[in-house]
Length: 128
Image (cartoon, rainbow, N blue to C red; front, top):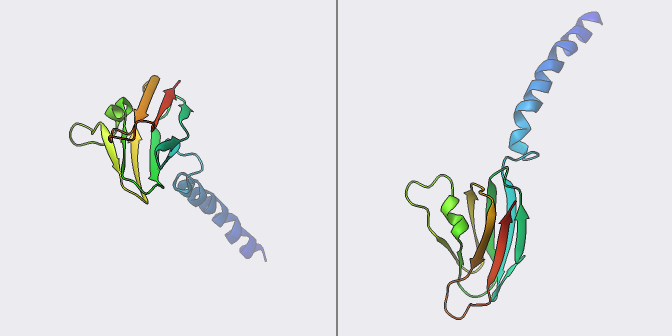
């Protein structure tokens, strides 16, 4: 009986170590702040988002509408991982999503759809 208990006691530190290594991949404490914006027929929702300037953001935009849209914003200049100059706009095809990681720089960033006839599609991301 004593040998069996000692063997279990030796496994506990290893189990704890494995749990600690898996914790970041579980997304419990992600480094990036998630922002989820939905493009619908001629509007973005939400139209205003506030985030902290302390951590980068993971911007996900989903086009739930029937029309092709575009997400244009000066905020895109701060994208990370770009091998060349980051694009100033992201195309949004119907029933698709796009995602990017952006380094936060405090400020107010307007976003809009630059497609003619979509002038009402706009919003603001505020990095505090």
